[in-house]
Length: 168
Image 1 (cartoon, rainbow, N blue to C red):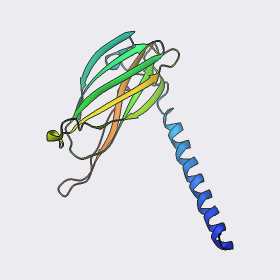
Image 2 (image 1 turned 45 degrees about the vertical axis):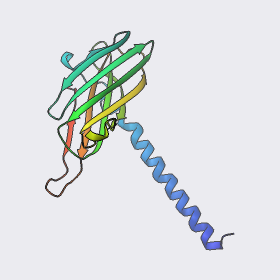
Image 3 (image 1 turned 90 degrees about the vertical axis):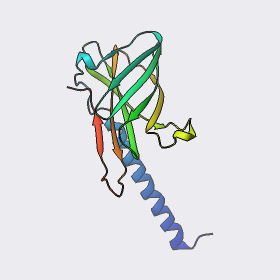
């Protein structure tokens, strides 16, 4: 069993861990409301269409994003690849903005990419993949995609933060 002081220390550590986890989760939940109500210009919107696959490609200063989506009822499946100009990506978080008929953000979902290791010869490739299923919120007529990322620091280059937002 535990010595009297040992048990109390374990309980204090467990309580501190639970508090940290609760604070982290609360922060993640509020992130989704940061851009609610903001406008996406018509050129940055993808109108939701039944069926699929519907293929899209767009290019930013950081990457080329190719994706397909399928829509059935209130379900949306998005999958695709990216070709990024940076090496050694630490994080890459995509943001899917659901929009109403006026192009205003009504919901935001973050999702992550992963390295494309389908061809071991191209292991150093900067291509990344992503796929995600979403429940389409009531009133959504279109969506837009944004992202935030960070490279790793190397001996000859500091870390670089990069992002794209479709918002006005």
